[in-house]
Length: 132
Image (tube, rainbow, N blue to C red):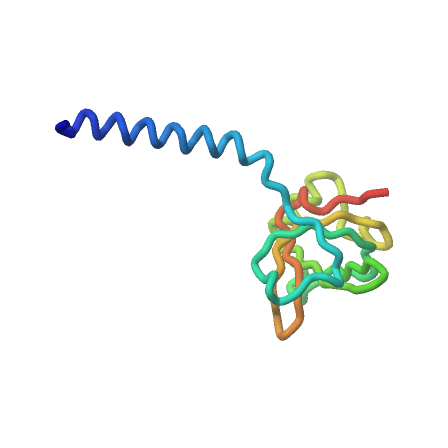
């Protein structure tokens, strides 16, 4: 059997279509891992996770563009970093960062390490929400 350019093109197109259909079908089922704050370890750096806890403290960077929120679940705490872009997204929802203080929240973010401390970087403005 001779493989011509036309046959090779058809095989490539069919393979690409199967891959795209697979991505479309499986993407909605990919879920962010929910973890307790106490279970976050250095081996999870660069992982996207979901946590729940109460915002116990809010601080601004010296440039006043970024925020540092302390989230506690009663057993452990972690700092949530919110960069300027996410602050804009939050304020576009008619919310102020201060509105989250002393409220239970659900957060989706990426675990990072800064000066030997584990932190969570907010994924997007929609990734921080108050829950009851």
